[in-house]
Length: 406
Image (cartoon, rainbow, N blue to C red):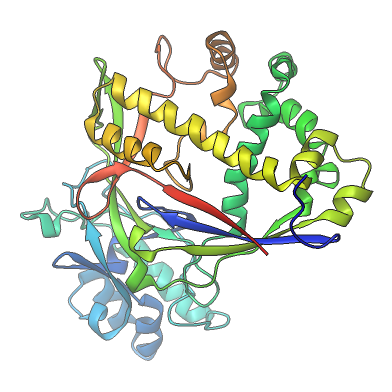
């Protein structure tokens, strides 16, 4: 057993290196009046600051936002990032803006939003209802489309949450443990659980019942340091690739724009530790998961194993359905002999579930039980999300994982 670290706590750092754009959402969306297209860049406006600056003339502020006649993006910018992969807007996603909470993360903490300012911001959202005209150029193509925001801290700085990475690694651990006893799925199939809680019976067997009995409570990940929005990010166009007549083709009628962490960021470090004292003393924790966390070699091997299964599965899928860009991208990762995983939006069913451990019969049983995929479809899942990286479209959310023990 390899036990790097002290007898009480084992510490380390995960280094993640994006190899395709990664989007980890905050739940926020930028409405059309909150950004401006400037050539091949997107400028996110500080609408709150503009309204606060014109609180003595609120009607002017609302009219200016509605008409777009005031140079808000240059006088009150939050940040400017490149935009990759312009695509013609889809009528389904353009149109009246959806309601959303006022932004409060511009250039720093602003404290509680003034009720009058909040009211004006809400009125602005409700009044900007006219869909933009069809674009005459690629530059104008993103106008009218919502932009999904990357998660940010209270100071408006983007970061990679430790919880997001932990969720990814938890899936790898769950698959490893499940493959030691695949009969566990029978409990899920027999239970009357909704789709949302479908695999709760399996999770209870692997990780215990409830958070107090979960061995992964001893596996603690911190958030990354704040990242630089203008240096490390871009607004990226995401297209949904769908199987049609045994070929992977872009699904029409969808326009998705995301703020994405780009490969140019290099390594992003996420500190972590494993609480060995708690792991050893808490006898209620399931033994198999405890043993995995206690041994560094097994711990690392689990992620490498999951990476290989995921890469092999995706390579076979892209190769079978003649998606050459996907084949080239995945094959390059396979040849590197490193650990590559998928994180954030667009990562797919295999990267977030124990589905890679299902044989054909089990997969069909699971699909029938929870009505997964379209009726009669032989393949599940049959869609993939590809994102523009500044040069072309590639599978979304992939990163290289390295572990440094301390």
